[in-house]
Amino acid sequence: MLPEPDKSKPLEDQWNHWLNGFGPGSVVYCALGSQITLGERPIPRTVFRNGTHRFTIFCSGKPPKGATIQEALPEGFEERVKGRGVVWGGWVQQPLILAHPSVGCFVSHCGFGSMWESLMSDCQIVLLPYLVDQVLNTRLLTEELEVSVEVQREETGWFSKENLSDATMSVMEKDSEIGNQVRRNHAKLKEILVSPGFINRLHR
Image 1: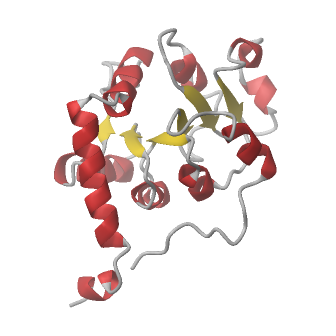
Image 2: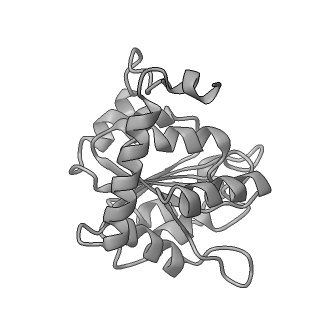
Image 3: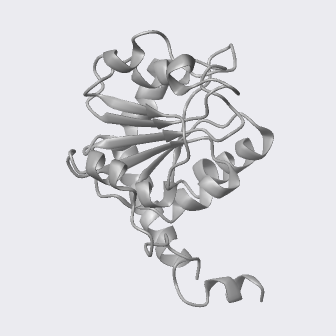
């Protein structure tokens, strides 16, 4: 069986307290790995710039070298999104954040570690791959296993706020056929992954 999140060390008070302020499954957690810095692409603006978004956003990313998170974001950005979410530039206990009852969706680049952490969670999975291995991981999760959805790319090769919103809403809406399908498939796969003897069966 694959290990579930290590809960011997609790989630940091800062994030546990913040997440406790929201209802079950109402927070979208976004983390796109260490290869992209917050100033390199308009990630936070893409995530937050949707006036109809009904979910709270927790965006974790790395600021450019030598810069603070405040310097990496547009002037006044944090104040504008206050009450709708938070952008954090430091390390976080990602498996424990995904395990928090308030977090209902994980927007991920689908790197190897994040892929497994998403599968071991109960969150809906939305993927924005940008490196070759991440694209392959995404194909596995979306097309073969059908446990996630991928955000449609623009002609520029990046992702628009509209496409990101559409993908997120497709899995977060309670009456969404796609959302219910990937949730069922994800639950079945997780049950297999955590079953005793799973790893041994792979080597037979």
